[in-house]
Image (cartoon, rainbow, N blue to C red; front, top):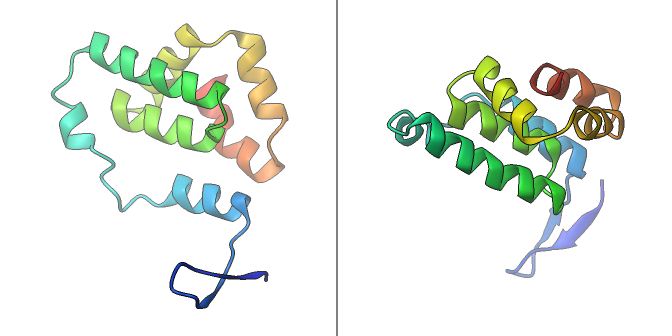
Length: 112
């Protein structure tokens, strides 16, 4: 595994981006602000998920988009509805296809 100096001058292992994405996607222990999002209206949720979609288009990993959309929407089903309204089918399919197989399985339920 690659090592790199951190800001303290110590060597630390550098995790591959795929490992970080997968760990973030499947770490169910973090609240991610879910308690706050429960107080929001559907309109507020759609706006916030829309901001995440813009972030995805500017480089945010699709796994983070899907996980945050689920947290904001309150369920995978509602996240899928929001994402379908905010992204074209072609864009969603392209997002799935460019991911490795392990991530495709995780994000496909949110996007199709």
